[in-house]
Amino acid sequence: MEAELGRCVASFFPGATGVAGAAKLSGGASQETWSFDIVHPDGNVGAILRRAPKGFGAAPLRAAGLNNEAVLMQLAYEAGVPSPRVLHVLRPEDDLGTGFIMERVEGETIARKILRDEKFAMARQHLARQLGRVAAGIHGLPQAKLPQLREMTSTKEIDELGREYHGFDWPRPVFELALRWLKDNDPGPPEEMTLVHGDFRHGNLIIGPVGVRAVLDWELAHLGDPMEDLGWICVNSWRFGEIDKPVGGFGSREELYAGYESAGRKVDPERALFWQVMGTLRWGVMCCGMMQRFRDQPDNSMERAMIGRRASETEIDLLVLLAPRAPDQK
Amino acid sequence: MQDQPTPIELTKAVADFLRNDIAPAIAGHNAFKLRVAINMLELVVRQLTCEQGSEQAEASRLVQLLGLKGSLFELNRALAERIASGEVDLATQGLVEHLWQTTLDKLAVDQPNYASYKRERGKGGT
Image (cartoon, rainbow over all chains, first blue to last red):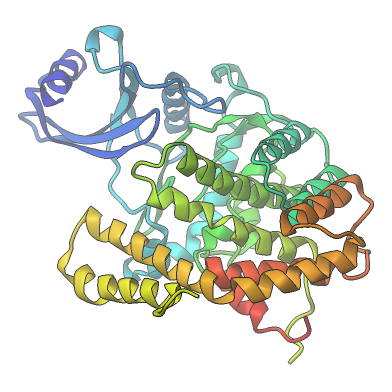
């Protein structure tokens, strides 16, 4: 791997003499992430390779595609959205599959550390507001420069989630209740369709001691209702126990919305809440999908099996949203 | 009649052994996977402990709610269909209480430490 990477790096990074410390960070069904250092006489440069190796299965239906991810990341970087700089988009002659190489941004992505470590105490105070501004920056990226992306409406998303859930053939009255509620409360297309990040939450945000350093993982980017991103980041599963701080377990909706509006875009709180319900159901359906994959390919998948058992957390969260009980009656 | 120890006791003994004696000696990615494995065994113990009682209660609530008889799967399917069609909704007598109780019983097995579960379980009433 280091030999191929070294040849590739030499072709676009003047003065680079090779690479060192290549390590695979994660490998999914269709994508891999590698970390390595570009060796250079003026000092090494940390880099990340995100790629689909040759011969890997096709990207999932919803994926924007790695080339589009690279374009979006670069557009975000140029617009001042915290984002790693894209250094190189893989070409066939690189012999590394498809994908791209970007700068490595140091920081933390693990939610429990971000929410608990003293090191991030200051970041936590500003994060919700900062992320509001970042989301507004993403939604404001110039439409004319965007690559070809799938278009998603609330109505289509309800249909897709319903179809996927029914495909599992395992009745869940709470999911049916949520689907029914979503159909009855579907706000229809937004005034303006924008770029939507699609997975704007812990895990895809690199955090440093003073706040957000980079937005990662544009795999689910699409055109749609900008309120989708604001609803998704408020899904209870991303609060990691800090359930009274709806934004990722660190902030309030008011802070998120204030940050968003300070960047000149308007929040529609009702739509955002609608998308939170949608997002909660979506995570539930994803958990059921993990259970399905565990059954289909039972190798190396204790984690998938256990994520399958997380579908019920979304059922309680949907009930809290749609059929709340009175506060403590004891 | 099968002999003792029961499946619950056997599974719990394995989980305890892995947690207390093996986990401290393992590092890295395997330590993470071991934790997942222990969590799985503990889930199985919880399910074996409470399944029978809660599923019987769920079935009898469903029979009452739907006016039908059948397996738990068939009853849940029937309820799901009635919710989808709008025949049953949040205003239907007993539905909200049933969904809450059923969901709390699932969380008691799947994730008793999930924060929304801990809060809701502490509430009086249903």
